[in-house]
Amino acid sequence: MLTWVPLAVSVAAGAVTRFNVRMARYLEIHPQDPQPRLVAQAVEVVRRGGLIAYPTDSGYAVGCALGNKEGLDRIKLMRRLDDKHHFTLVCRDFAQLGQFVIVDNAVFRLIKSATPGPYTFILRGTQEVPRRLLHPKKHTVGVRIPDHRTTQALLAELGEPLLSSTLILPGQETPMTEGWMVKEELEGLLDVIVDSDVDSSEPTTVVDLTSGTPEVLRTGAGDPSRFA
Image 1 (tube, rainbow, N blue to C red):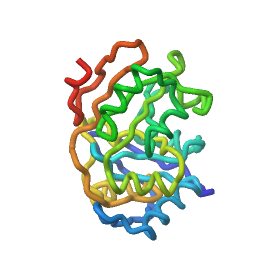
Image 2: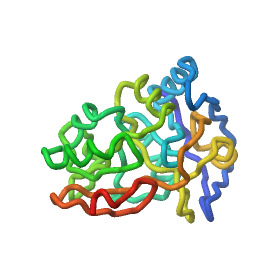
Image 3: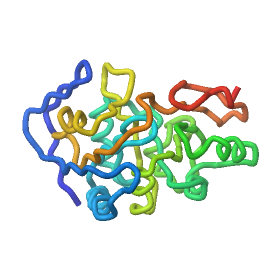
C-alpha cells in the first residue's frame, strides 16, 4: 500500500501549487500497441493504492482502485468535488458494467448501441458498488466503457473497473489532454501518469437513465442525438 502524505495545495484557475515535491512515475505508452510491461507497471501502482492519470477517448481521467477510500479523498481534493458528485466506474466491457449497475432490457439496448464510446451513463448501483461511491440520495453511480486502446489495456490488466473522474481542474471547462502537461501541473498529486494519445478534448456526454427516459445532463464528445 502506498503511503500518501497530505499536501498543502492551492488549486486556482486550472493550476495546482504544491508546497512539497513528490515524483510520479511517468510512462509513455504507445496509443495503438500498448507495451504490456509498462501497462503492468501502471496497474501495479494502482493496486498498491496509488492515483493514476490516464488518457481516454474524451480527455484525461484521474482514477484509483475501486476500494481505495484514500484515493477517492485525494481525487475530491484535487478536483474540489463534494459528496453529490457522480463518480464513474470505467469498465472494460458490458459484462463488467452489468455487475455494478441495474440494467433492464431498454437500458441494455441503449447502452449497447453507444458503447464503447465517449458516454457516461448514470444508473442505480448494485450491491457491488461501495456505498461511499453512490449518490447519497439517489443511490446512483456513473459507468462507461471507453473506446481507447491504452485505457482498455489498463482495464484488462487490472481486472476490475477504475474508479474515475474526468481530469478537469477547478476553473476549467474541458479536460486535460496532454500527458506532459499533466506531469507539469499535477506530478506532486499523482503516483503514476500515463502519456498516450487522447481522441477528443471534450469530456464524455453524460446521460441519466434512471427514470426510464434518457436525460442528457452534459453534452460532450458523444453525439447526444441518439438519446433524443
